[in-house]
Length: 118
Image (cartoon, rainbow, N blue to C red; front, side):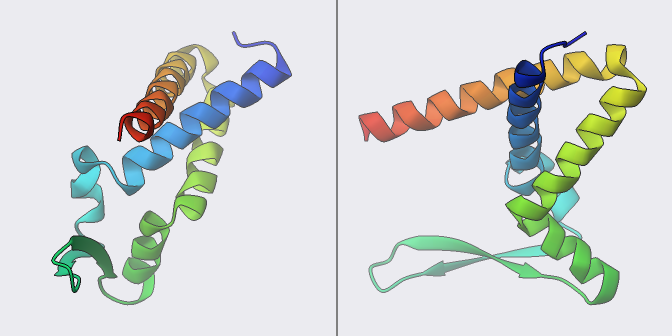
């Protein structure tokens, strides 16, 4: 079981980052966002394409759509879910948290390398 409070904070931070990114923007989880978002592609004056999100519906559907489009909002809920499930079932959830944290580190490294090489 994870013991150090600093290590715990770093691991949970990285895992929450990766889970949040997975839910908010990765294509593998587009099916989660599809009932709540329309993705609209538009070209600017120079012909560069940009993708924008339009929130579908009203009420709870729009609220969920807003939640799923906001890194801050989704990040809070992802952190909450990871932490509470870890408190309840640490031996089951801890491997998931570690894998998400490792994937988060890999994503950060990839972003850095991509910026350096571009």
